[in-house]
Image 1 (cartoon, rainbow, N blue to C red):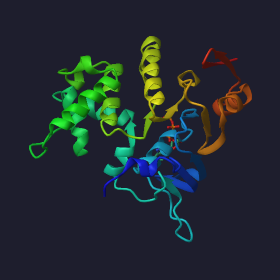
Image 2 (image 1 turned 90 degrees about the vertical axis):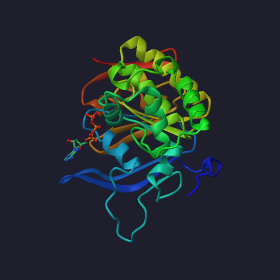
Image 3 (image 1 turned 30 degrees about the vertical axis):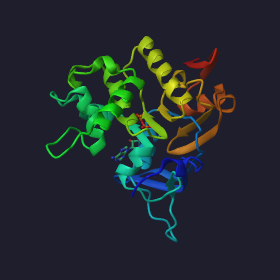
Image 4 (image 1 turned 45 degrees about the vertical axis):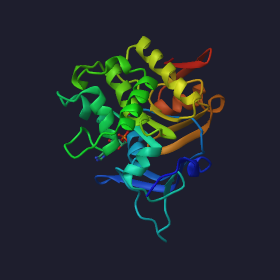
Length: 273
Ligand SMILES: Nc1ncnc2c1ncn2[C@@H]1O[C@H](COP(=O)(O)OP(=O)(O)OP(=O)(O)O)[C@@H](O)[C@H]1O
């Protein structure tokens, strides 16, 4: 199947309708609904154990919702309930801690190979993978977009957390996806690296890549992100604009402690009272 990106420009990025997801013996998402429209940069915020990773895995098709009575699809990504995972990756790039772990634990994996192998939905290049000049061009372009050109030639295992994260963003960007799903993208970054990284993401957002940012931290909600979703105990606590959602009351309910939210220019912060 060829995926033509224009076909997906107007359909909702995500439409989850009454989905329930089990992990092991436990029901983690219980009749969960969430709709994210086309082009809506969104932060998904929740405490440890709120169900963020479960939601990410539902979106990336590593987990499936329980079958519903009547058999109707409980979730659609870009308007479809069925996807070949490799086609979906072309529209929705993923950057996750597990991908970073896999790429950085391979001692001989070099930066350009980590990006190029994405064209073959592989983790490294194999003998049967034919790399074309246009793939190399796209790789260089994506590394530049992600601010990672200077890392070419290095092994993934030798990179700092922040450097490796940039290469993984490039790996997701080679497909020129409509959207990026970023699961805890700032984990392990110091505050200056975090700000530089976030500014880089802002550039991507301004150039038309929709960002779905999953995080514990209010500080990571970029100015371009206008919509926030709060998760608590596997349920959607609130979805709305930053003004509606980033309040002391709602964040206290999200984290189960009295939290005070402050605005700093275009960014926010939160602290326990
Ligand atoms: N394989 C599993 N079997 C049983 N329960 C699980 C499994 N994986 C996760 N859970 C439970 O599901 C709930 C949600 O976990 P999830 O990892 O989605 O939360 P999270 O919001 O991503 O948390 P964190 O911020 O700590 O990563 C937690 O209570 C967790 O213990």
